[in-house]
Every structure is written in structure tokens, then in C-alpha cells.
Length: 303
Image 1 (tube, rainbow, N blue to C red):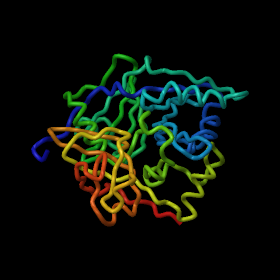
Image 2 (image 1 turned 180 degrees about the horizontal axis):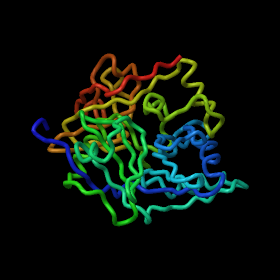
Image 3 (image 1 turned 135 degrees about the horizontal axis):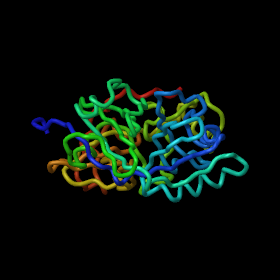
Image 4 (image 1 turned 45 degrees about the vertical axis):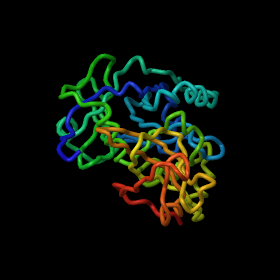
């Protein structure tokens, strides 16, 4: 990996778009998601989760405000249809229309010089409109800037092509999860470090699962966190992780996986105690040994 320069762009067909249109679009999403959409300003993007009543994540989004009455939510396609259905159940009398707009847009990822040439503000969760393309600056990874591009269907930013596996490798090493269907309702946001990467606003009003999310944060009950691991065989989201300290029951789960140049990495949600002693294994206590990697950001301490 050391001899490879991450620079270029790749289509990301596994992502889709939910469009919220109407005078109540921002207010509606503010009441349903873990992030503040009422006070979103020009130049800002949002990372957010949609939770059930028990605080378990049903989807995660990158959100941008296109206009006063239009917000786009980018999420994994494997969750889009059911998430759209669940969100629509809460519309009631709100003046907002939710639609699957995936066919209207092309989504691509840019990394390295290609990304930094597009957005000179490298800070994460920034939004910029360039010609016909919406740009979202993501968390950097492996020392490289990353930008998500949402353009009218068929349009892509110029730049050298890069293998999607390289993009996914960098995505895993950013430590920021985009949930897929294999991990539906498995985690409260803090189990994926969402409170530490700008995915939860604890000052906003109620949303589904808000009491559980807040209680987890402020009563010192956070016992699971997201970590980056390397292994010697491929990972799949939803796979269980075991500790040598307790070989009979899993201590975690794979959330997002990547393989590149015969190397394998994943973001996993683990019991914090399992990271302090003993060995971690994939699939069973006899499975491949895993190596913990440093997170690229500090964790917000619970209270």
C-alpha cells in the first residue's frame, strides 16, 4: 500500500438518494433524525442516523440542503426502500414529499488531489455546489482528502479513475460507517461512534429513540464502540467477532468491510472490554486473528 498514491474518482452505485421536498422538509427531518436540519447553513452537510423507538439505527445518511424546500439524503441502496417507507409513515400532515430520487443522480467518490482540487476547505461535513454538482467533504483517510459528488444522472467530475476497492479501503480507514441492511437495527449510534464524528446532536429536540440515545451518552453506559481491524481473510458486514476471553458468545460484529491488494480491513463494533485483553477472532473463537488499528479521531467520552 505504501507505493500507491490515492488520487482519482470512482462511481459509487451502491448509494442512493432520498429527496425531501416541501415547506416542512427541514422541520420534518429535524424531528426524525439524530442531527439538526433546521439550523443547517449554506456550506454545511449533515451526518445523521434514523433510529427506531429503541434507539437502534435503521439507516444512516449524508444530508445536504439544496434549497429552502429541498433536502437530499444519501444512504446505502440496500436500506433505501424500507427507510423511505418507514419515514413516510411519519409524514402525516407535514407539508413534505419523500421520494426515491436515485435515478436522478450519479454519485461518485473523489480522493487525493482530485478531491482537494474540487474543495479547498478540507474540513469534514462541508457542502459546496460546483456547476451542476453537489460536493460533500468527508472525513479524511490515510492522509487523503475525500469528497462525495452528487451530480445529475450521467455527469461525473473529471479525474483519473480509481478502483472502487481503493475507495472502500479508504472509507473503512476513515472510521465513519455508512450502515447497510446486514446491520439493520443492530446498533445505537454511539456503538458506531456517531456521537464522535458529528452524527448526533444532543441539544436538539425529540426524534424516534432519542431518550435511549441520550441515556446511553449521559449515564456512562457506553459499552460498545466502533474500531478498525485488519485480518488475513475477507470480512462481510454482519459477521460476528469473538474474544479469546469468552469464546462461547460474540463480542462484536463487522459493520463495514474492504479488501484491496490482498489486504482485508473492517470497521467493527466491539464491546470495549474485549479490546483491552485477549485476542479477537473472526467468526468463531478459532477464526482468523484480528489486529486492532488506531482510530483517526478521538472518541467523545460518555458522562
